[in-house]
Length: 549
Figure: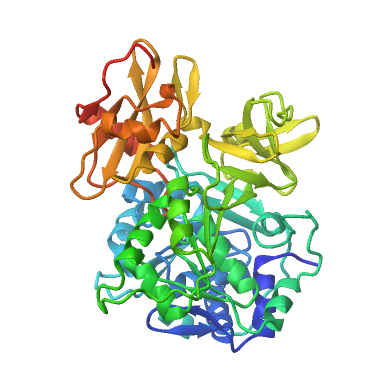
């Protein structure tokens, strides 16, 4: 029996061919049509010399064609490479070369960048361009996507696949160069794709279970993955939909109002986002209502709002629950290196001090530097670690692999660097990534906790917190903030809110105001950008002098 991504999608196709699989604002694709088009693209790639294990890039926003390409690559037993569509040319060249890419599928709007980089990457032999309404000339030797499909064949006549086939996802690179995380497909499915029961830890043994469950339901689940498909959470949500016969909404642009228009138009049941960076514009937009009809948005179909990779701040959770009392809000923790690790369900008025809390699964632990498990209620800070079904390592990077994937007492762990504390009730308080933590006078301060406190103030829309050199304390905490409207609250004005959330030594000492906080397309913080803001000019506001940190 093979637990393979392409096989799992094909099970759904076989049981529910006439169901709608994918939809955007102008068209829809059934599972039967997805099968035909993905088969054609897979055969085209094979005819161009793509072999099992070869790397094929997908350089696209969220489109139906991007999902077709994803399925086609898995069908051909090749390895999909997620290419960040915000990359500049030197970053594109890095990921093309680092991944050993041999073929590329890209939207036409990126043709100039592709054309400029391709001469430096001779290993890429095949380029396929997806029409997107722009009129840039195609890169040399590129073939139009629809022409490639038209000249190929739609039969499913591929070689047998394996649970050991590789799935790879590149990290965001917000604190360093992107790294390709390699997973066996079965391991990925076990921790992210629905192959295990989170609460019991029991493995799913029947590879048809998800598709059979979807076929037996009255109506398919309508999911809307809002972050780019280059982000692991959106990629996973889309595959979940394909595994159980759901309908996935694919829209290439994000705006608060655009989300509610999509929910209203497509009857969306479940949306996937990355924390406050996406959730706050949505909350503002639904409060304003539809500017075209001057009526409230219709959102009764929405059951679940799920966030991954960036947890919701307490202030947002309370606002959302108040407006949507019947909807379920979930935070899930994990990373490209661990997969799913834990879950929190939001509750109005819950105690938030000290950072977000989650319930971890049986394969996730908090350990110290020697691999010993942190005792619940001890107050000790440790590192989040996962064992069991974890990645093989980083592609082409044995040094980083050894740093992240460690063996303690004969057990292999994935330890990407997230710090946490185990509370008396067994829940885990997430503190943040160690690589961006701030050491001030020997105290370790985690930016996410301070950012959440800042965003609890009604005039702060978004915030990033970094450390800057300090002669006395080594580093001091500072913040770059995006305010609402024209307001520019000072640190003294923010203090009454901050003291309710964080200790005095964690308080920002300086503020920089920014028109917009820079984040990745998936909403992840860009701490390199924030640090550059603090180095480029004097702060806009300083805390009043104090003898304490």
